Image (cartoon, rainbow, N blue to C red; front, side, top):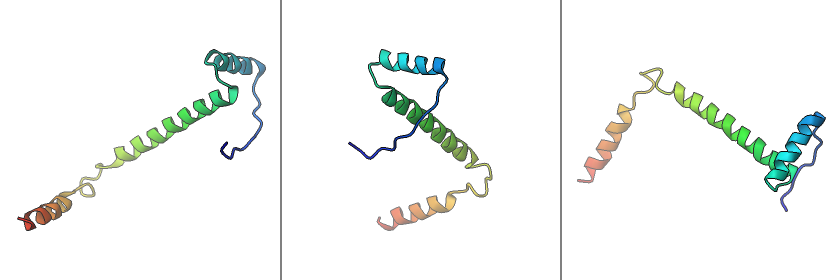
Length: 81
């Protein structure tokens, strides 16, 4: 078993019952159900952060100019011929 951190979560009783019912429906423990839900939320946030970062690429056309890299690759390829 991996190292794990145990901590207490406090839920509204109705919310807890919904979580319990949903985890039972999937045949999983509440812990496994919540771990999967939190992992999915973190992945969603990470994807949004990456998307936003990639959206910034190319906004400044001078900074986005990659001709120098294409020229360097061309030089290396043609050097071998």
